[in-house]
Length: 76
Image (cartoon, rainbow, N blue to C red):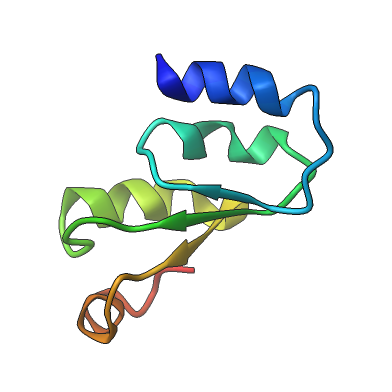
C-alpha cells in the first residue's frame, strides 16, 4: 500500500532521483524518467539478488556494507 501511495505521489512531481528502500517500489522504476537508486537491506546472494537482477538497469543499488557489495558483484 505504501509503495503504491508513494508512486502516485511521485507522478505529480519531477524529482531528480528517487531513493527507494522498499521491495515493491522498484517495480515502477522503469516507468519513471528520474533514475532510481535502491538501498538493499538484506542478503543479495539469494532470492533478493535474483529480484534485483530481474529489474535490470531500471534500478541502481546501494549496498549497506562492503561485504554485501562483494557478495553480489554483478548487481548494478
